[in-house]
Length: 330
Ligand code: 13P
Image (cartoon, rainbow, N blue to C red):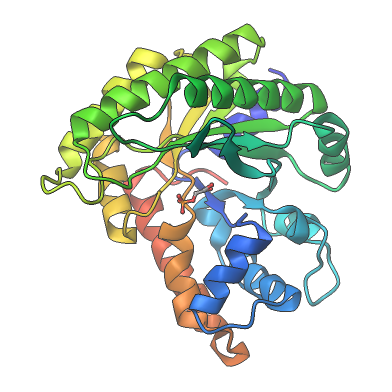
């Protein structure tokens, strides 16, 4: 087995998921401010140190996705983040896109950028200790969207990114996120997610991306957040699995879902229902907000409350890991 295939298998190992702590500087700063914390480089560092040094995190987390700022920072004890994450028993990931930018001509939609100069950057991230990477394409649902242009442009970029990662020695996490915003139904989300994932799968194949050496990070198929008719976890799991089976090759290393604005409890309940589904791949989590929001709320930037923040993260990780069943043999 080649080493990328092994790394991908480690990311989705039984009982484990991925912690997405890779908010961009702008997004992280906004979340800190909302929690009453000054949006400084030092506070962003302190917060990420709180997360990655949570005791026993590796029992339920295989890898942590960081942004470039954190990748280059050090823990208070002087260890660079990637070295510390490895010491804690986890793999370091790096978000490598440069953000979703307005798609000229379709201004309500975006295309995720970052392909220029990507390959040398990837090589540098490998040298800094990264083992896997992430790129997020974003799709909105309304009467007109997503347009063919948005579906095509984002699928193309995701595939070029994934191919470059595999050549550079990184496992790509491929994240096409169909947003939950809107009044659309579960069926409409299923239809759009099928189109989006179908386009992504086509481009991945065209670029020769090895499915066994990548992890897909999709949205779950859910009704719009403002849809009057919400769905039970069983329906969400059925719809999500049906879309994945229709679009993804059987030899994909695994699927690690984003939480996308679901509450921590909803995301866990849906992940639990997904475990009941017969699928050819491990189905796990790569949550951001559903894992870290309670930790940020408990910490609030107070050095005396680091322990409370870590306990909140630990609780969410254990809840998600528990629904995955078997604990991985570490
Ligand atoms: P959420 O789980 O908060 O959607 O974040 C996952 C992620 O990595 C977004 O890019």
